[in-house]
Image (cartoon, rainbow, N blue to C red):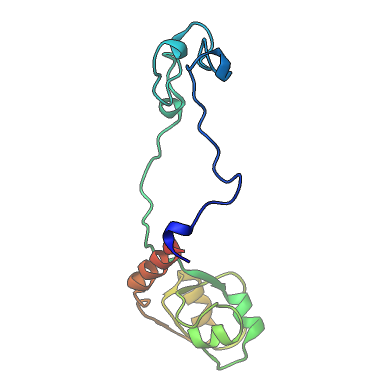
Length: 165
């Protein structure tokens, strides 16, 4: 098959509407513009509402700024840790991922202080709230807080890949 042999399927291409070419065409006299008025006489820019304040200007403006590559932390509460883990366990991303609390082991998470912890745990987390620290140390455990992994490049690559489709 050669390029000069190709043709479109029957009915795929419709002839364009020829307006203002006489009444026999079916689109003569007013050329599908109606009788009088602004639309019959000239062009009106898109979004023009006849002098009324357009909807684009009536709508409130977006305020503030939302950081596009912010790090979102998954919340993990102490009562959930008390249910899923036993005394003396080490809580980190790997353990939470194995317990089904995180989607992936390197996902940033924050330990929050809801509930009580009746036993000692060793918690290694990127973020720990003040109430959670109190509850963990009151139960005889230790808290090791570290900076989360910088996934900025990974997030940008992920969003770029999603945009490509």
